[in-house]
Amino acid sequence: MTSGVSTRTGGRPGSPPALFILSVATLAASLVLFTALVTGAACGSGGGGDPFTAISVGTATATPSPDAPTATSTATPSPTAAPTTPAGRAETPAPNGEDTSPRVACTLLAPVDQTRRVARDCTLGGGGLTAETAAAFERMRAEAAKEGLTLVIISGYRGFDSQKQIYDGDVAAFGPNQNVSAKPGHSEHQLGTTVDINEIAESFGETAEGKWLAKNSVKFGFVMSYPPGREAQTGYAYEPWHFRYIGPDTAAAYQTSGTTLNRFLAGR
Image 1 (cartoon, rainbow, N blue to C red):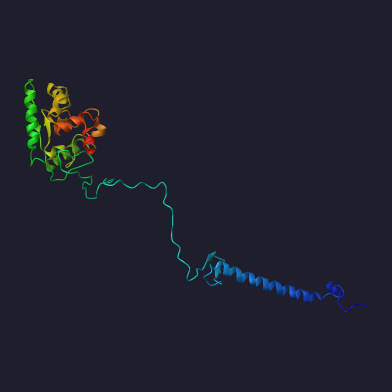
Image 2: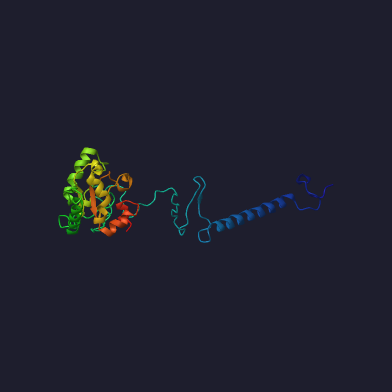
């Protein structure tokens, strides 16, 4: 005789019916799952959005909450990015061919060279050599004459337009990288303080006049702008005939500086 409980449930006499236990367990599990879903959604909302924000599983992209902030790019600049172009220096020519190199003041000691220029209308001598330059050359010429030497100016002041004609001709003859003439605005001749003496030839440096000038010109305030062996610093070929007046005191200081004239003047 049985106790009235079916042995098919595997229960024991006096235990709750198995079906009842299973029902209670199922209900408890459902409550636990519902609570977890609600709690989890609320935690993932950031505390401000709808806890039941829809999520598309198929595309793995979340639908943003209406009040969620918009994402912005905060990419870190590449450490290998090209450095900023130095102020005052043009890395590429202007589209219209304009000279964009730095412009210096129109003064006796203006450091004009391949990278620095004076304004188109710059001239210290009013369209010729300055009076100071002409007087200094006359004193130098007279002193050389005492030793039987002859000094003659064959080129003095040259304005912007005249220099352009010479420059264009040398570019046509020797190419754009020629180093025998300056671009207009970059020539020391435009200042009215520079002279070419006797002849345009490197061999002039080996003549009696050329050697005398190299030794004595500083006493009269003149210096050779483009000495031999310094082409990399001056930007121009050796010119033993090209002398610039900068005044006796400045010329003496330059002579002991050990550098080239363009760098010496740029550092003053």
